Image 1 (cartoon, rainbow, N blue to C red):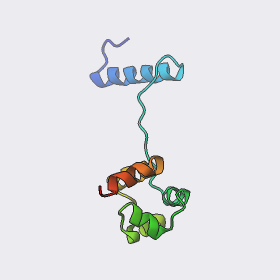
Image 2 (image 1 turned 30 degrees about the vertical axis):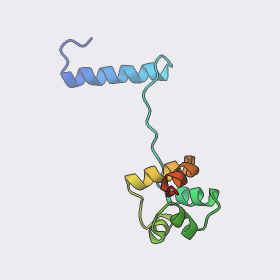
Image 3 (image 1 turned 135 degrees about the vertical axis):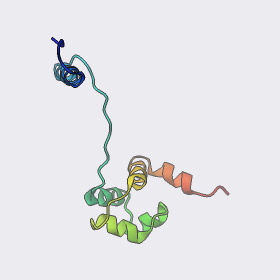
Length: 103
């Protein structure tokens, strides 16, 4: 079936066979979690913690103006900030511990 096809043609055929196997439940494909940098998510993370914008910014060492810009959709968090927001969302205490000075 692959005779006479270009390298690209064989790669496309192989990829389509992989997709079909996945759809049939014969194989699991690797997945990647993509975070949501939307303003609604950022507000939801902050509100879930019961913090004002200022409190949230102070607790997690963020600039209050930057948090405001994210929440109002005027700016989108960069990749590093999105990673931090994801960790805050899932494990806020871990971030707080990491940012607290040892006494």
